[in-house]
Length: 277
Image (cartoon, rainbow, N blue to C red; front, side, top):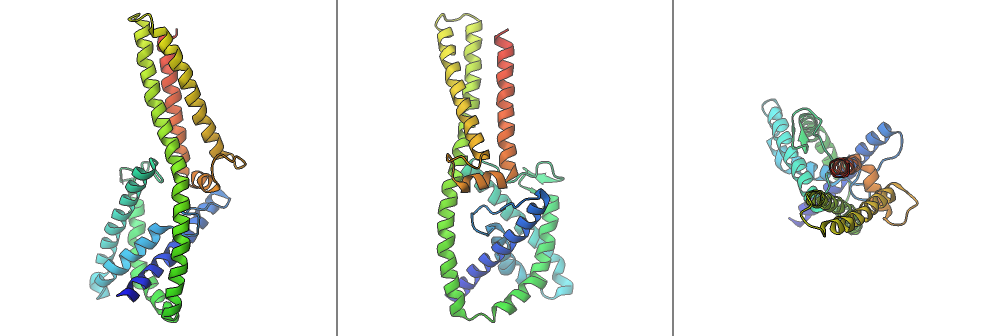
């Protein structure tokens, strides 16, 4: 039982590394520069390792006989992979207050977390994994002594856990920035209400209140802009290299931040035009 678990853990890391390699090459070629597409600092994309385990444990047993079961492999593979991708997106968004990928512009998407195109990719991957990749992997891994595999798993696990701790710590910087932006949006809306009260001359003291609030908002917005500039500036020491890498590697993080800033600026302009003419 323990041996099987260790072999599954090794498979998880092997295919996490393979997935990272493929995705990094694809994104790097598209951007004409090196893009580390892993959530972690090391060369792993855990979602691919988790997908490989799903296919190996739950889908592969359904594969025989080929003529009658290949379509079942594709369908079950698509469903399981979509569930995995959706849950991963949901959990990461709740943990870090940020959307790491977004398929909202893609055809037949569900909440921007999964889409038809990637579902088809998962179906193809499940077929190739079960009938080609898994048999080759299991054949080749048979040449590696079990003791060597166990040692490799132990070493990789230690490195992985250290990497995970450092990466989660870095993502909390992004989490705090997103919370700052949301808090600022709320404060700006409240400022609009204060201006409305002032415009209606309900309180003589309101002018002092909204003047102080304006000063506070200006400082908050400057802090947010400085944070975004720091994430975009490689030489800045405010954020760790891991935080900057995550921000630059996941384009959706940057576009989401920029979209929120544009919405805030639009709201500010609306308030200004309504109450300061």
